[in-house]
Amino acid sequence: MTTVAVLRERLLGIARHQRLITYRDIAARIGLPLPFDLGVERQLERLMDELIEENKARREPLLTALIINAETKYPGKGLFPVLRSYRENFRDDLDLWTQEVARIYTYRKWER
Image 1 (cartoon, rainbow, N blue to C red):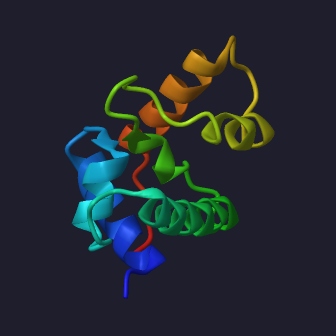
Image 2 (cartoon, helix red, strand yellow; image 1 turned 60 degrees about the vertical axis):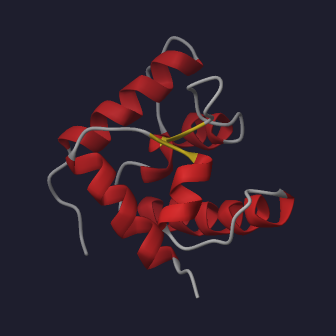
Image 3 (cartoon, rainbow, N blue to C red; image 1 turned 60 degrees about the horizontal axis):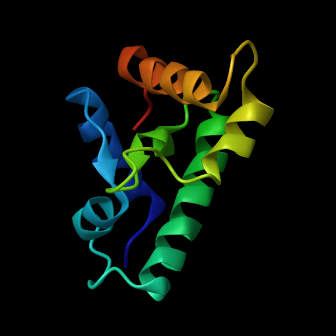
């Protein structure tokens, strides 16, 4: 079964290479069944929500900011309210997101 720990490890690997990943690709990398349909999307959302809570509890950057839509090249709109409640000092959503991605790439205290 896919767990938050697996999602976390895959995203840490993406962060180490300073990359972004699409929803479909991260779903495949963590072992969710394809095709990427509504059921798989819901499973991924649940895991992402759990990882966000884990990151917040550990006072870490939010790793889910690395996951983007393949067409828009931006994260889903659900990420922005979470980031707005977690961060300060940003001009707009794009600035907020790019700041979070930069935090992820430079953060050195990731717990396993």
